[in-house]
Amino acid sequence: MSVERTFSIIKPDAVAAGRSGAILAMIEEAGFRILALRMTKLTATQARAFYAVHQARPFYEGLVKFMTEGSIVVMALEREGAIAKLREVMGATNPANAAEGTIRKRYATDIERNAIHGSDAAETAETELRFFFTTAELL
Image 1 (cartoon, rainbow, N blue to C red):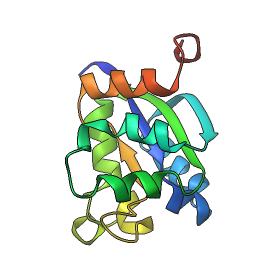
Image 2 (image 1 turned 30 degrees about the horizontal axis):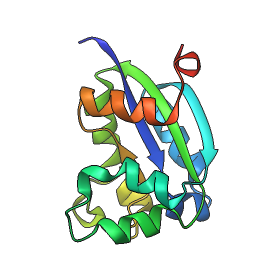
Image 3 (image 1 turned 90 degrees about the horizontal axis):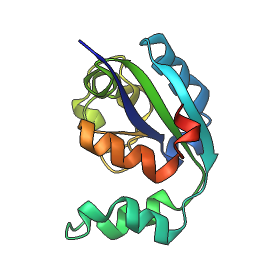
């Protein structure tokens, strides 16, 4: 298995609840190296651009509203099999279906306020990393 990079966001619900440190610890304990990390707040324009792939979906406007309601933590991560491993550590999108010990099982409220985002494929990871980080930040 090769070393790969992925992207993740600790979402506003988890940041507001003071869970960022615990989530970061779980990520590091899973063998990830944090390449870049920043706390920021998305504007509506940025949230619409980042989630443009979901524009036709009924949850889009609610997602934009949620992602702009508070601070988020964006991060670039690296390890062998990073994308699949992060998705395993995060747990199912719906915390009711997430495995015990996963981030979403521990910290998510529901399917919409689910604490964390992670890239779902190599191409998505590359696009999402470039959305938030410069090439210099990813060296």
